[in-house]
Image (cartoon, rainbow, N blue to C red):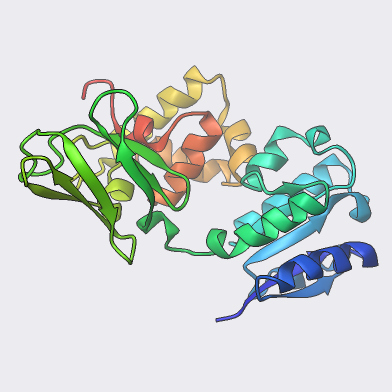
Length: 274
């Protein structure tokens, strides 16, 4: 399926700059003027917001970027000025996809296809032995990383790892040990239970305990529910429901909350008692 993105801009040179970069990756684009935001989202995997051309004040820019992300599209901020002048929350909402020159545009255009893959969290990007100890370090396609203590599974006899290969689907990693034993780690288990230590068991999430843990970490970070809502684009009443244990969030939502608090998803899922 051909990917398509929206260029939210009225500036022709920005359109040409992006279209040249997007065409190299077989990505189509449509141009929408900033005051027609509602039509920018429909069927698009990403929306590139021309920050300087739109002449939006700080609140309008934040609302625009947040609306794009909350609608399920990938927001990208295009700036002519120094990218460091943007608020941190804008960079976070854009998952770091902020451009300020031709080189940035080319790099982000190349990343759109991977970022648009809704199942990248279920595929390995990299699996290796930890640089500290013999734990297994796994990196998923969405950038999540986790450490898995040995033994990985029942076949892991504790001998040194001689090789690690990722299967063609990137869903599983096979670890061959010097003893001749073979064990496996699946990307689904890494994403579904990033706090587990053996890499092979599912963890049932207790909504009440999870909510209490989120509230504890939010308070430790000095954040109010309103600030957490602003950072994530999740409505404050919904955050309150999660913290009260009345709603168990999806793992994707949990990752957004953890990222905004400044901790890993693993840190949320693993209580201090464990």
